[in-house]
Length: 116
Image 1: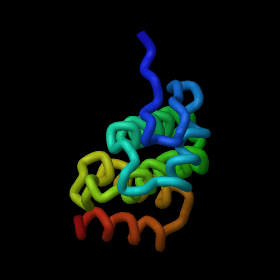
Image 2: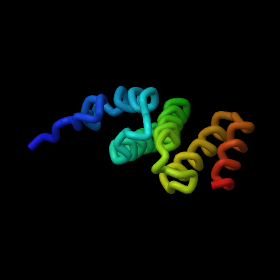
Image 3: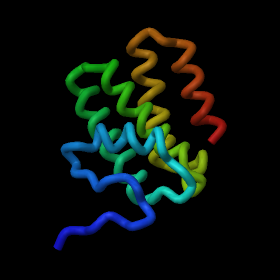
């Protein structure tokens, strides 16, 4: 049985293979009526992709994935600054920024974690 899109949701359903396009859509169109489970799933997929890219030493693309995860979680009121997935993504952004020599961004991400 396949799930049908919710009549209230204008975003198309996505598969794990097409999460990048869905991520971009949700970052652009997230509202307080967006499905938080869908946002959480997309954020998780981006974090997993970031982890794989980090292991391949593709730091710039990993940074992009973790940034998108934070944007998704920041875009909805049901996720607060103490959300554990958001904090993990920010920690990874700090590490990646350090590896890329972006020390000011590293400090910024660390401060975001400490303020959470």
